[in-house]
Length: 131
Image 1 (tube, rainbow, N blue to C red):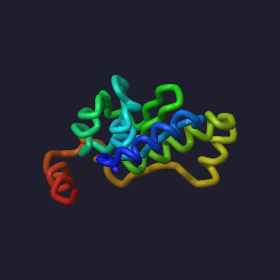
Image 2: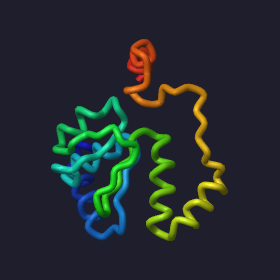
Image 3: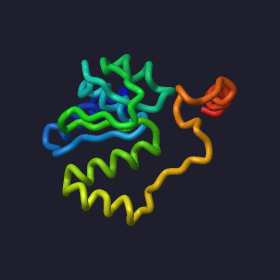
Image 4: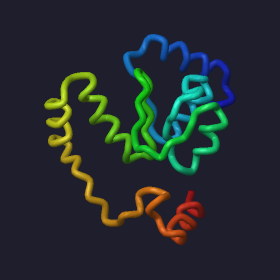
């Protein structure tokens, strides 16, 4: 998709009329390739930071980043964080909190290795092997 000019034109065209344009994980690289993130901070999966920055975005390790109508979420699980925030933007905070409750979104990960900053070297190395 990144090398498909017609697809990137479609992304730009669609973005022009969206209330919000969002991405999860490496989807932000697509937004970057379409030129939507030039000069903006954005997030993506940690393994795709260089690719995101190659399209003019400034990577941040934040789980969710918002610039007006553009919202990027880091890895897959942060997409849920973004979805709850987006629900608040589209409705109100009480409704977003009710959605969070209905989905029982109350993260309690078994390990504290969910970011590059927290993961020991051996965990990071294994993740890179698996990636």
